[in-house]
Amino acid sequence: MANQSQPSPVPEVQIQSRGAFRVAGLRYEGKGAPGEIPALWDNQFLPRMDELASIRVGREAYGVSRAKPDFDKTGVFEYLAAVEVKSFDYLPQGMVGWAIPAQTYAVLPANDVPGISPMLDYYYHQWLLQSKEYVAADGPMFELYPATYSQDLIIYLYNPIGPR
Image (cartoon, rainbow, N blue to C red):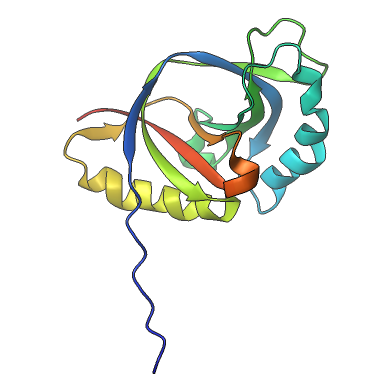
């Protein structure tokens, strides 16, 4: 019998509001060439993450993306490999802090890092276009790596939205 592929299940999108918070870590600016952001995590941020232990909140990690003003023309964006922090006081040398505003998000689960692109494609090219209630809103998008990530490899993608 031939192996028939099953259609991929449609991911469940949850709508969540989140208050403002702060993150700190190491910044990247570029077009996201293959391997650049994983290298930021593996070779730079993860070896230094414990330097934030005295101001860190929780056990989650964040990958925060925000478009540069001329993103539509250049494709250049900023990305921060980070953890949540209580304050920006006493940041280790070379680390930066970003304030994330209160926002409503469309939240999608991704299966590990290779699952991020397919989920973002689904969000932008299907869910957002079909939504009768929401449109994309200005603000940073972020990946949430929960404390359980090392066991289940589930990442949550937070995409800012507003009412249609």
